[in-house]
Image (cartoon, rainbow, N blue to C red; front, side, top):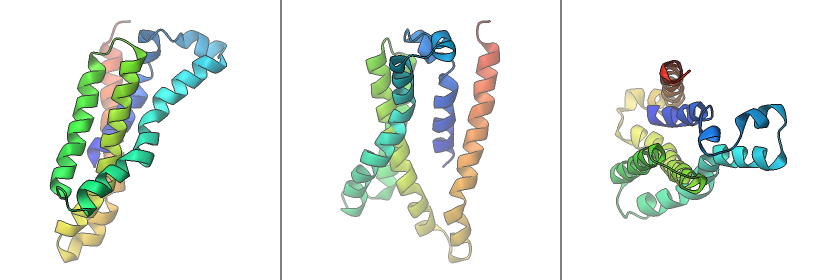
Length: 160
């Protein structure tokens, strides 16, 4: 649960630097935005969420509800997608690779968001099942907080 908040805020923190790294002039984007620059920036930011909502739950439905691997292994696969996207994004050279990493991240985020709350309530004792079912929001928020702290730390340590 914390991972989803971390993923979400890490993407927002990356918005400070990736436009310059991928030759999208961020100064021009702020001062005199063109339709193309805003579209490129917006699609790169929104891609994981679109994939998470449109594709990832179909994948998890196939693996989990059809009984192919079960919830535990589906969570492991979702984590592998998230890990691969983050490691891949650290070594990208162009916008196409960056977009592919964002799409992989969306698959991991969507799969985790659709599997983990259900699995958590299935394995929880009856007395705390309802509390755990609703605690994903708290865990997600905590992940956002931790990621924003990490973003601030990396931003301050970076080149000035």
